[in-house]
Length: 84
Image (cartoon, rainbow, N blue to C red; front, side, top):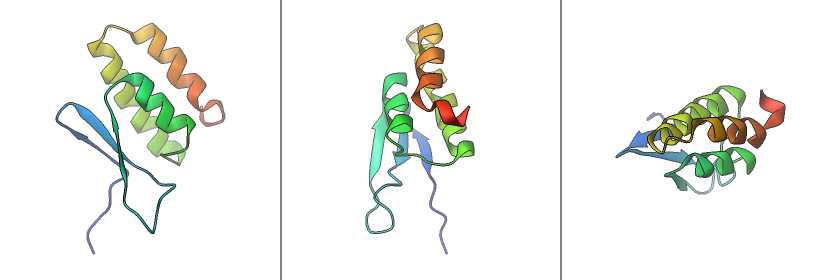
């Protein structure tokens, strides 16, 4: 049985499997900015503390490219305050 990943880094973007659509549909959400990452966390596109933490780490990578780390740290932390 092939594995399904919750997220994948591809071509400098983060693709997140929309867990709200499973199991009927396999829909990927593309994140190009840390704000996109915060949105998928807040909207519960990604679920589970380990996956949320990993996706947030990729958000930091995206923020680093734009030199927006302090803002991204706050925004990503606020996206899911119950999963700190």
